[in-house]
Amino acid sequence: MRTDDPLLTILACPLDKGPLSLLPEEDALYNPRLHLSYPIVDGIPQLLPSSGRKVDTVDHERFLSSLKASAT
Image (cartoon, rainbow, N blue to C red):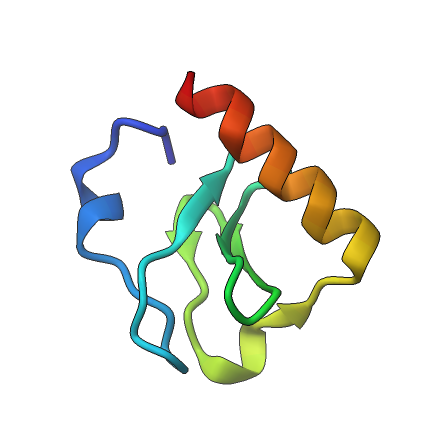
């Protein structure tokens, strides 16, 4: 999945229904509100609630920095 993929505009977290951010280096979609990472396997986002992986504070800060850097 690429950062300019139109699918990203309609994908939502299955738990809070909010938007997700692409983490290309992790091959995952990220919900910063709940600190959950959803894997992308063979180009397919795994958006079942049970697929979400809780992200610790260190990785959360790293992901936010990465997202800020890619936005500029």
